[in-house]
Image: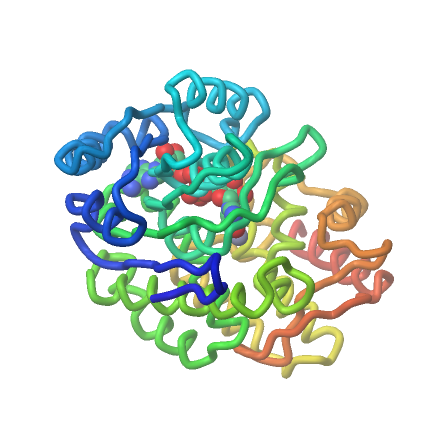
Length: 369
Ligand SMILES: NC(=O)c1ccc[n+]([C@@H]2O[C@H](COP(=O)([O-])OP(=O)(O)OC[C@H]3O[C@@H](n4cnc5c(N)ncnc54)[C@H](O)[C@@H]3O)[C@@H](O)[C@H]2O)c1
Ligand SMILES: [Zn+2]
């Protein structure tokens, strides 16, 4: 499939056993270039050799860099280490970076590619479900600041996204489910029939049925590519992709990025909260948030603040503060993605803060009780 962005457009290839033929696929798309692979320790142990062998066979292999796994690698210190290392390896403007890993590697490598020698090309080979359906497509790159996540970054589109769905077989189940919350998101935004398909095929996806997985990944990439093509730099419609994220990010920030709440788990709770809040404002028929919550619960995802495995609960003030710090705040007004129904989400520019406060108070207290 193509992401239609004119001269910055690119292909997304989705299939099985693509890793073994990656070098040929890259060369077909962008010609032969010297490629440096950047990956994390976990993924290196599983897939680096295979990718190296493929690039070596085409004579395009220029080395690899293996970073520690985890969100902490999206930092200034790892970024500095990486770009210094790449310059030391003699990476030139015409060379190619290959990001092999989850969203952490994809975001960091994309950012490095956007500034190294004023910009080099890069290929995304996403290995988590979250990265395959979300972070590898769209060109948002970046690292975290001590003030918050993803506050330093660029828009830099990849030259190619190569999605080998077989690599999901080794992904820990909790990570797979976290990515699944993003798959569900596309159904909730504007594809009601896809949500209904997910309700029927959840078991096949979670148990690793290749056809069901390929369909879910392809539909998700199509949905994301359409939104990105319409609004590359998020001046409007792209903000729909933040459904569940303003609530989710606040919960993640409160939980402290220590592994107690994965991004996708925060998004799952956030999706339910967005529908519950929409119902409360009378925007959405009652019962719809229940259907959303049931599906996510069936998948094994958390759907309420009380599902987070921490010793304490957040206060409403903490949550509101984090929500207002989220970069989706414009001119002091909170922008939320709300919904009229499944598949009918919209951007609410100035959300009523007093109502939101009452709603969160109810969520935090009632669920604690
Ligand atoms: N750029 C964007 O548009 C965008 C969108 C969504 C999320 N993100 C970012 O993505 C990041 C999260 O990405 P993630 O959830 O992929 O996390 P991740 O990259 O940390 O990967 C999760 C874990 O799975 C391991 N792993 C990866 N692939 C594996 C495989 N095939 N088998 C076994 N283990 C494997 C990794 O080593 C890691 O321990 C966050 O930093 C988030 O901000 C970016
Ligand atoms: Zn997300």
